[in-house]
Picture (cartoon, rainbow, N blue to C red):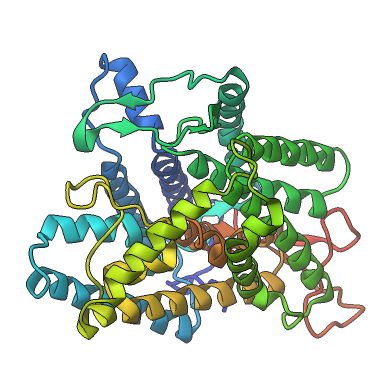
Length: 459
């Protein structure tokens, strides 16, 4: 279902309410950037205040959520499919029940520990209910350009770090909960590109998103703009390579493949062309890499073919899998509460680096099943809406989201994908216009620059 005005009035792009909604939308976008680039705010405070950090990154989440709630007073409510709504309410309700179990039946977990664990993993998933109240607040074209121009200086810094072999900025500022520490920024003596992020893979996730947006723009646009976006795609690819993180290479590659496949599906107008199975195919691919990586690439110590980090991950997975399954049946079902979070002494040395195991360890088998179902319903919604009303940004966001099962094999990446649905719902797509003389039963997909025009849904 497409967005409809909640007050059933004609939505005028020049109306004061619309202008206020757009301002709030862009402020929410800016706060999301500050949350994603998690070293930006601490580094800025340290530079201004002589090394002190007085505003923690978590404060930006409250700003972000407040802006979205304010948007809901001015904006549109989207009619999402009932199965997606049901999956969301099931998962959020289960989190509430499981929190009580972790607090009162699995001591000694404190309220602070449970809340911060939920925040670290599920903040953006829990916020989906608010996302659906703030639909169509940003122009797609402006969103794509803003994302790239924000990434440009970040990418330059990241590439410079790798080339110079130096971090170029302090890797630790502030202390405790108000501080910022960059981790894993070297790989066998080589400097990884991490820019202003806390980790090279976080920087690489952003580069992969920009790569998907750029490639989608190349496929849709014509003329000189195609060349500009092709340059942006190459730049994002170079930045991703400089992370020296093989999970990012996989995500970037699979995301680009999905852009091409979803674009072709949009041209044919067939949702049932097999693209809905992309996450499962990618997940199987990642599982095969885990099993056969050593046989496929060998083990050249000190190079990208070194499988030492993978072997280390497998040992950690075995450890926490045993901790989850070896206890009582109740803990298998509802979790042990163990999280990967350096904030607490109890969890400071926990390294799981696997989304499935991370969710299962904390909230149990029931929580894992409900999370998988929610993510699958989100994916089906993105595919259906993208094929129904294709656009550059929709194709890119859906393609990026398609990699969630594969990348989840090598890191805990819940929030990075959950926020994609906000960008998808907030972006206002341009609708294909049916050529009356042809009398098509459905709007056909025509790339920008063709004879068929497209009408933008919002101002």
